[in-house]
Amino acid sequence: MAENQTDYSIADDEVVDICRQLIRHDTTNFGGNNAKGERKAAEYVAELLSEVGFECTIEESEKGRASLVARFEGTDSSLPALIVHGHLDVVPAMADDWSVDPFAAEVKDGMIWGRGAVDMKDMDAMMLATVRHMVRNQEKPRRDLILAFFADEEAGGEYGAGYMVEKHPHLFEGATEAISEVGGFSADINGQRTYLLQTAEKGIAWLKLTAHGRAGHGSQVNDDNAVTKLAGAVSRIGAYEWPLSYTKTTRAFLEGVSELTGVAFDESNPQVLLDQLGTVARFVGATLQNTANPSVLTAGYKHNVIPGTAEALIDARTLPEQQELVIAKIRELAGEGVDLSSVHEDVALETTFSGNLVDSMVAALGKEDPDAVVLPYMLSGGTDNKSLSRLGITGYGFAPLRLPKELDFTGLFHGVDERVPIESLRFGMRVLHRLLSTY
Image (cartoon, rainbow, N blue to C red; front, side, top):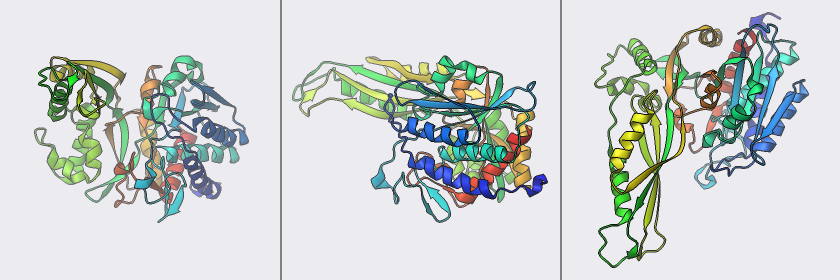
């Protein structure tokens, strides 16, 4: 059968069913090695892969914290391998806030609803449906494909990709590049459907502030109050305006948007250009500067007792090569009497919007959507590509989805009523098949 006559009928059904089944596996990750369901989800993935002949390796960093790796041998062993990876864990969902059961994978309005539908069990399903389709049709990739499904991505990857890279690096032998989540989705820019290919992501610095003071009775004058010190530090850090700083990725993206819209790129005032992006502006706007957001406060245990210590957590996201500068600034803003310590840090990543893999991703999108425009962008969050970078592997975000322009897709990440259009899933599976079968 010719390429343009590929029969996707079985894969079209499978990608939907697999996505729904994965969502029904409650793999909530609460952080701090407190998660559930990852082992059962990995075993479900292993069943799907074993059924079509793959040998799967499942490794646990701690009881139940399971990650899976399988290799799809290619026809040319001289080519470097490509890692195609996803994560099986999801962030918590408060069921009372949702209009549907977040783990029922209900189909409504042509979409699959549930926690993980966009982050990232949609991509997991596309990966699985694609390789099962290739095996059924006796297709082999040109290069080895390393399929990885990690635990713990939503808490920094210590019990997932980080563990696998440190303890089982041989499973990724021969790989030089990787693709994963939060890239390849479409956005409407000035009436032009534009796909955002992730070539960079900010670094992570999860920090803790600890203020010390004199404990005492709440009725007494206290000029050494730990809560007061902490409140001042949190206020200064939260209110600080980080200067604009354009990396090669954000500059290329904004120049591309300028070309599409005819709106000039003013480095001193990028908001005019960001206004052309609709809801995507939230994703992109956070990549034009470093950020540091207070997220958790802990102090005291009784109304009339002044505590001796008070703590706050700060979520800082840093541009490439600026992490040390950001941490130093946060320490300065915290002020005297407040200690700063690190809870978790990871590297920022940035690569070029060029090369054979990028060309192949762009071409695969173009085959399914001939009018597509593709731009590079930086992710304000992080992915498991950070862990793989320790092995010298260059990572990209490419979970392709052609989306209806009225859908606030970026707002669904970690959001209430998370959902993915079924036709977008099927589109992504076709694009992924074109890429993996030819690259």
